[in-house]
Length: 365
Image (tube, rainbow, N blue to C red; front, side, top):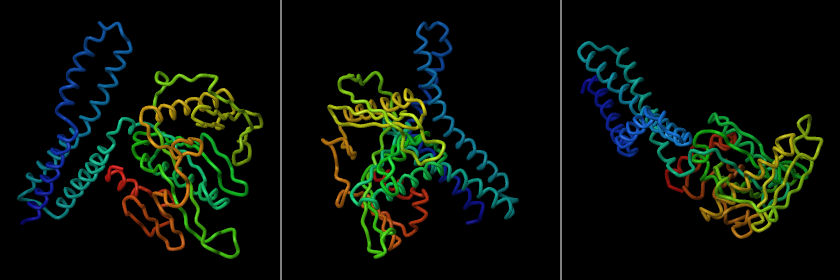
């Protein structure tokens, strides 16, 4: 088979992938819905409900994006196929390589889009919060919790997500006892939702002269930033609100006044905290928002919560409950659920987690 025929076959295989993707994403139904909403918006001047117009525009924008991104692949591919046919009798290696590179680019972008179809959950497109809690292991566990914090901050940076450390409690000597970070970006929750669980670290104790191997545990709980104002009503009698000085990493950013806020929901023992603003009022609003989100999750999803203050659903942060092991001495990281492992420990700790995350998402965890 000639080089041209090989490339043409590759192009048609990509076209088949696009056809499959159209069916999987209800492309043709979305086209009909887009046309319907477009006609309704043309008569929007007759609507008296402004909220309805806003809702229709949001639906239109979402459908238009979904349709346009696949349509752009179709147009690119059709143009490339025409180019292949045009040069079928007068090709040279330079042209062949350029066309092949173009097809590879389309194929890679299409693979990313196919992967994104995994994010079909109700809240997958939302921003999210990560609660990190040091478990058994004392100072070592607190140091491990801090390593995890930096790892997920770095992962977010690599994915161009914005981050905000909502709350952080420093350890007695080093590391952190707990922290809450907000990840801001499209599909942040979809990407990270399977990271909820206990993470186990095995390494030589860096603060001990004996260099004995030490096992530490820290837990992660990932939950979406969803709008809950209409679903959850808080009773003031159920809330215990404490204010105190923040305990950040030091320097000019540490608040000198008692602006940090801790809110305890007495019936469930859920605790939320915020200290990232110098304003006590803003910290209180943020802590209340997180509380509503957690109560909402507890109410509608009835999922188990791996967090210290949710006693009814608490999973112990210790041996036997972990989802991933990080064995530093043996240069091995292994996910217990999927069996995926790597020897490139430092790369993972620097935020390159996609190998594990993609495997867990594809496994439907």
